[in-house]
Image 1 (cartoon, each protein chain N blue to C red):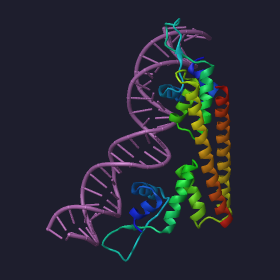
Image 2 (cartoon, each protein chain N blue to C red; image 1 turned 90 degrees about the vertical axis):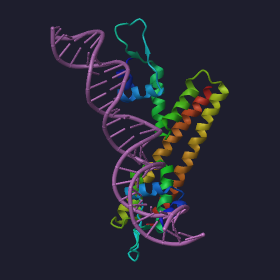
Image 3 (cartoon, rainbow over the protein chains, first blue to last red; image 1 turned 180 degrees about the horizontal axis):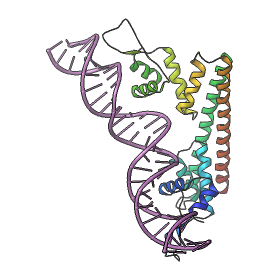
Image 4 (cartoon, chains in turn purple, green, brown, yellow; image 1 turned 45 degrees about the vertical axis):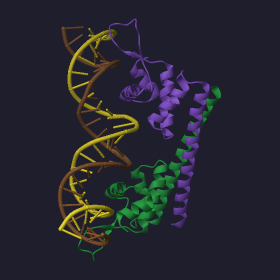
Length: 115
Length: 115
DNA sequence: GTCAACCATAGACTATGCTCTAAGGTTAAC
DNA sequence: GTTAACCTTAGAGCATAGTCTATGGTTGAC
């Protein structure tokens, strides 16, 4: 599929996809049999990557952190052990964030009680 | 206390405090009995405000959102009802964020299992 | 054969949240 | 009386994460 279709499938703008591509989060490929244009083609993995990016962004991860998660999942130069380590660190980061959110909930609840 | 002491008490830089002051999140006051300089003085409430700001930032709130929380707590032009409404919306936002974090945890756990 | 609808690259612009520099004033210690 | 250590305002600069514009190429419908 071309970038426009990918954008529609993933629910992001074409601009954003190009931005992510420059950042290294998704990668389109040129079809060597087509010489008249240099359009990039994307596969289902690109859709999966974009969905992962959106979820991870909602969870408060930066693009840098998301790039590590994506590498842990897709990059074949990592050993399974390394991949596991990266993902476990992200899991820990999520637990820390949840802890902070709960602390903030407590602060707001205390405010509400004092009103 | 002056800005330097406030910065040390709250654990932020003087620059950051001035930035927050321009943003309206903290406010120093001039002592009218002092005419030789125009230094701003801060009270304990400023320390509390900065602590609240740091906690809320950790919880992923933007300065705009934090400004609403601070107004709900300190601004006397709001009725108790209005204050309660604002804080309850923030509580809901926190619950939504926690939900997103848990979803991301699930995604990463699934990845870990598949490795 | 031209118009719409795509595609590409390059780079300018924006918002958020700082962070730092410049330029100048006051005060306290030596 | 000058040096250090503060204070002030004004504004420049930076990182992140987009968002948009300019410019130009290809293709298909009419």
